[in-house]
Amino acid sequence: MKLNNILAVALVATAMSLTSCSKKMITESSASYATFNISCLHSNGDGTETVMAWGQGKDYQTAAEAARRNAVREMIFKGITSGSTKGCNVRPIVPEVNAQEKYSWYFDKFFANGGAYTKYVSKPADQKKGIRANKSTGMMSASVQVTVDRSALRQRLIDDEILKP
Image (cartoon, rainbow, N blue to C red; front, side, top):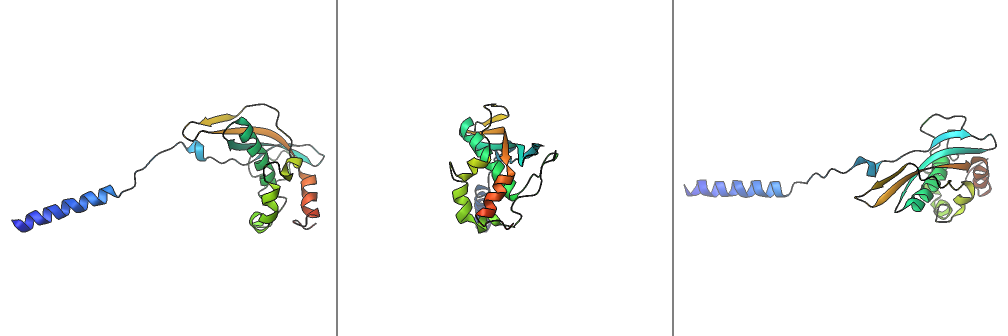
């Protein structure tokens, strides 16, 4: 009888310890983790391409600036991977794998706040369309239409010896 009580207590203690260590599943909105690629709206025929880009920030201005930075970053490293091409060059400017990490000394400065990337992308019209707020994180997502000067950006990377001609 005493052995049965000890086994019962041990079994209950084991069961309690196993259930208390389990992970609790928390479901959050998948929108907070969504990532978007740039989409080509049209090629302007002068070396510039107008794209739709997305960014996140604490307010619209921060999100729009992140979208501008994302437009240039994706054009350099990923190319246009979503939507129809509408005459845009879909290939990345720098096709080298892991180029952003390899040349981090260059691109960290290039993509810093107010960095050189701003010379190659237009400021979006104050359209404030495509805005989504995530109340749980306090972040805002914004889609903006910007024009990226692809040919000047490519020439800059050649001049700075990041890209071979």
